[in-house]
Image 1 (tube, rainbow, N blue to C red):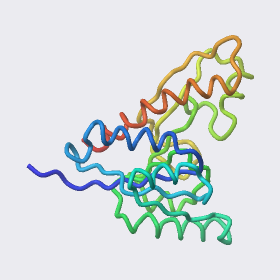
Image 2 (spheres, rainbow, N blue to C red; image 1 turned 180 degrees about the vertical axis):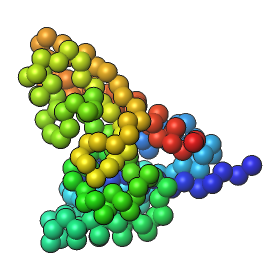
Image 3 (cartoon, rainbow, N blue to C red; image 1 turned 45 degrees about the horizontal axis):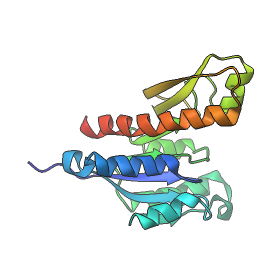
Image 4 (cartoon, one colour; image 1 turned 30 degrees about the horizontal axis):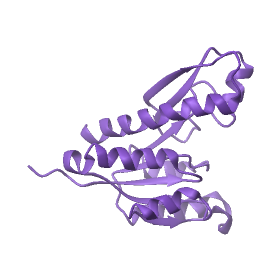
Length: 196
């Protein structure tokens, strides 16, 4: 029995460690053979994003849509959609993609757009999540995989991982422990979507 093709496009802004975790999981767990899930392209809004080089070394198509070259968010999102749609993706995965997307972009990919956020949503949407968790005296922090909606860091929760906040934690140490859980839960959540 053949499986339907489910191309995956990943969006990054930096080192792309979650992107690398997704690509490696897709190969080790044979997503293509099991569900037709193939990472086909990595797109960044920053030409200097280190993850682009890693993706190229893996033989993946890469593209840059530099937000600084566009007049406003709508123009950037329109160019980004064009780059993504060239790959006809079943899923668009945000992996450290540091841009707030317009409602039109989110609507265009409704049901196909997924993000990972370094907190236990709905707590601490936005930036500086680890610092805020420590300052608030939280005993636990974590990460959330969720569907993207027009509201920042909202949407149906697909997976979460909990990490204890230690008494001597710094934002950097906490971020490191949370990131290791992100690398685990993001591929697991994507597998559930592919196999649904």
